[in-house]
Image (cartoon, rainbow, N blue to C red; front, top):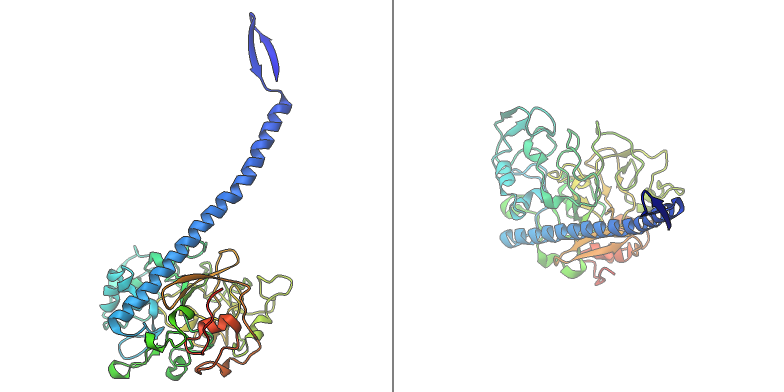
Length: 382
């Protein structure tokens, strides 16, 4: 350090240029070391919040079961309900009674501008419970339910729009079964998870209860998380991101068919010729599987697949997240676990029709076995 004589015998300490640069370099190194630690701490907090959300949703599903003696159907499509998802049915159990009451009264508040609850409104004469989940101008479909959002997903709280109302990160498990529309009653019974389609009323209801989880509630997946897509101006944007896009026009009966459209040079993208849709994370009230379900077939953070370009077709919806290395899932006993991207998924070329709707061991490894409720497996998450 250099000492300089100033004025009448007064000395003032100062830094040389070299010393100043060294100090700046040390500060830069410390910041470089600190930032990753801060980011890791923030992600740990976000992941914990996501875990808490899944825990709350799992408890809500069980509270519904306690009140009704069956799990909420993944899709209610009968004379009372119009293609309504499991997420609508648990609203009273996630402190969203006001949203449920408006829906139960017919969803009478309509919007003149998509996604804008402050826009001009008119009352519509709707039958109780019969507001359709695909109608963009039903105000309740834009309800922001806090426990539906994973904080690690940058798009989960995106601005709603006509094609993307009702944001949600969590899905009901169909297990290792790739099935089609909730309009098809018999097909809904082919679910290998705890949730089934309800096309009946009263004594004709087609529902499942906890006694049907033969493999044990601690061994069977109940809910999982999926990423959402950014709000866009239309419904038919092409996206190459495998985590936020759905591959269309490929038959999920053979999961390897869907995997074949993953870019070998960039595993996070579809190949250039893939036709996709940005439908992930929207329309939580809609019971169609492309909006409400998840499967334990392909590895977490892998591809999503739809038989055609119709939302009423057969799907594989694969859990995905921004958490490093895997996804959160809730088991049927309410426990929340983290499943690695590298979990054993068996043979992706296996014909899904050999398993769906049947009480047989899964062909999709540990992951598939975790999804089935009555396959005779007793494996748990690693």
